[in-house]
Image (cartoon, rainbow, N blue to C red; front, side, top):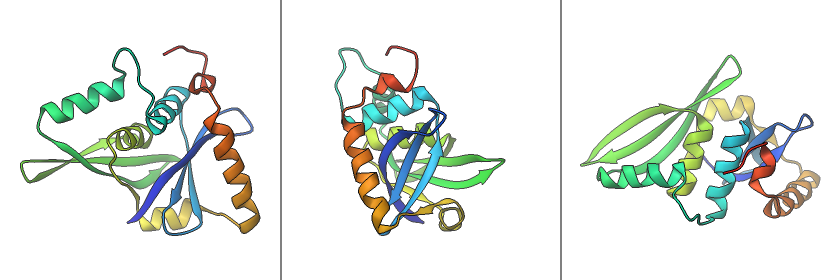
Length: 159
């Protein structure tokens, strides 16, 4: 398993949100196309922005904590028909509970609850993109621009 972190959420040429997961110990990025609602949730989780009323991620966190569980990790483990699959791994009373979930939801929960995110080695080898030295500056610039992007710009809706 390769540990990754959210490097950002961007828009592709068709204005579709793309989650960028970068390996912690290397120069590869795994792009995962997500919906606008999911892109906003991930962006809000990364920023840790408070809201007057709890968002879905806050409710999930409260449920997990109320049940005496912890989010141990997220594992993005396969791709089938151009769709990524993930497992949200919880622990409770010494037992691990693995829940099938979309990578976008899993990543948002992991970021919100400060849990590590992993990608299967073979999947990373097959799907990740190597970042060249000159591309690193572009990614850093993109990351800076995204800090000023309103998450609501990922879709035509209001949270």
